[in-house]
Every structure is written in structure tokens, then in C-alpha cells.
Image: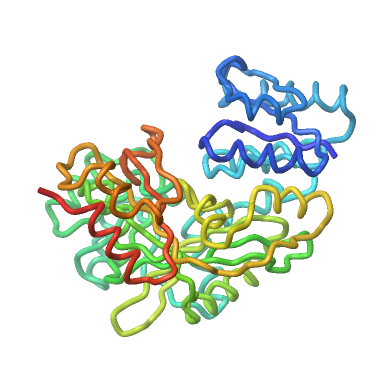
Amino acid sequence: MNFIFLSPYFPDNFSKFCQGLKETGVNVLGIGDAPYDGLKTELKDSLTEYYRVDDMEDYSQLLKACGYFTSKYGKIDRIESHNEYWLETDARLRTDFNVQGLKIDEIKPMKYKSKMKKVFNQAGLNTARGKVVNNIEEAEELIAEVDYPVVVKPDNGVGAVETFKLNNQTELVDFFERKLDIDYIMEEYIEGRIYTFDGLTDAEGNLVFSSSLIYNAGIMEAVNEGLDLFYYIPRELPQDIVEAGRKTLEAFELRERFFHFEYFKMSDGKVVALEVNIRPPGGLTLDMFNYANDIDIFRQYGKLVTQYKFDAEISRKYNCFYVGRKNSFNYRNSLGDILNNYGEHVALHEEIAPILAQAIGDYGIIIRTEKLDRGIEAVDYALDKV
């Protein structure tokens, strides 16, 4: 099997996909703009060959790279990056080379938030009232219906980039004076906690792995207000979120894909669908899947692709927490203090890539505990400030 992996070195832990694929007998063919000599040894050892391009944004260079691999290794079986930024590029290459997976004409409902909303509604899920607004007059019409505050974000956006909460007319006018020349969707502001339904489907669309994240705050607030961020995988998945997630999965008909669905859960228990992401959750969350269940999700993905099976036991042995510490804060307890007091529960700790740090912190710590209270205690200790 020939598997082209775009940008296999970012984020850093995604290189483990290449390791998992190689272990299951795949020819892993990397394409990226990073120098080969700068790649981690483990990644180099996992790649059958690496094709360096000057500019990943230049589609003609990617076409040339895929053409080269086709001529040398034969038909390409998969093209993936698992990265939000390259989803449309992946789909375009699959279309041009007739490779199994989502094609460019299928991906729009999974990339444009306004189109997602229509699919959510057709599936019987609750959504925030909102629409694409092309000018301030259209925005004022919506605000007259839903009132302030409202949230504006790119209709086709990544993460919380260019996402803002507007509280009054002054902020509305300022937004339209400064906004980028792209389509924005405006929605009523939902007061609730963010939950996710995450997982992986096989080639027939069957759910083979599932998980859930519960956030202390939204990514928008973490970026725009500089807040701390932590989230966790509970041992027992919230059933209302699982139910909403399964409806979403059925509506979008995803096959052989990771997914990351986001919801608000309001104080009255109402679940409101936020958005779908047809890729794995970011940061160190894939590692959290492993630590929560004592599995290797990267190798299981390789098995799913090559052998059409996922045979790991999903034990949900631990609650698993991600703690993101920011350099701008003065924390009461050092990393050494955390390790001295909670080291038995710290599964991983490492610096976060600068491009991700504004959202999820400069330094990430994964903590796993059998008892939820013990995990919350460790998180509070790690985030306590002077």
C-alpha cells in the first residue's frame, strides 16, 4: 500500500501516524517543505521516501510530487495529512489522482460552518441562530433578532482564528472596519460548556473508537482573553453528547476518518451543535486517547487502513487531563513541584509549538488518574497562580 502523508512533521506527534503505518506494512511517502535533515530520526525511519517542495501552498508542486511517487511506486492508495489546514488540499489531490477518500466536491459541508448548520438542523440537532453576514446592515438585522452578545468567525476557518465576541454596537462597527476580506458567519452567543465527541470510523462508516473532551473554557476565550486552558477525557462518556455525536456522524457519513465534533452544553442540559472537524483533535489529544485507554491509536489507524480492523480494547481505565501553562502567567508551583507531588499521574509533559501556544499554552502536561477528584486536584495545583 502506498500512503502519501502531507506535512508529516506537524504537529510533532502526528509523525507517529507514519510510524504506525510503517509497522503495518505501508510504504509511507512524505511531502513537505521542511528540510529532510531537520526531521526527527523516528520520522525518517518511518518514511519510504520524502519529497521536499519549496512551498506547500503551491499546488503545482504537490501535483509534481504525487506524480513522481505514482511513477516510482505505482497507484497511490491514500493521501492524508490529518491536519485542518490541508483538508481541502488533501481532497483536491485525491480527486486529481482518483484516490480513495473524501473528494473536493464532498468536503464543503464539512468545512463551511454555515453548511454544517444546515446538516445539523436536518439531523434534528439544536444549533445557535445565525447566518453569514456580508455587511453591517445584515449583521444588525440578526442582532435585532438575537440581541448582543454575538460571535463572529470565518465561515471557513481553522480553530479560533479571527473569532470574536461582540458585545455592543461600537465593537460591531470596529469589527467591520477591521475584518478580513472573507465570509464571516455571525451567531447568537451561547452560554455553555464545550463538550466534544471524538473518534474514528472504518471504511464502512462504522464507529470503531470514541471518546469525549470536556473543556474548562472555550478556545476563543483562551486566545482572545489569554485564559488558561484545560480539558479532559472522562472515564464515563456523557450519554447526551454521545447521542448527539452519533446523530452527527450518521448525518455526515464519514468513512475511514478521525473526527472531532464540538457542542455546547447549556445550564439547562440542552445540547447545541457547534461544528464538525473531520480530522483528529489537535494538540496532544491523540496521546491522551492512548494514555486514557493504554492503547496505541497510531498503530490502530495503520491496522484500520491496511487490515480493515481496529482490535484495541477500549478500557477507559483513566480520566485523562490536558493542562496548558502559559509563559505570561506566574504560577505558584513549578514543573518540578508538579512532578514531585503528582509525578505518578503525569504521563507526558513537553513544550508546545509556538503556532499552537496562544490557544493551548506554551507547555503541555498530560495527567491521568483513576479518580476524577484526584485529577481535578492536580490540575488546580498546576494552574494555581501567585
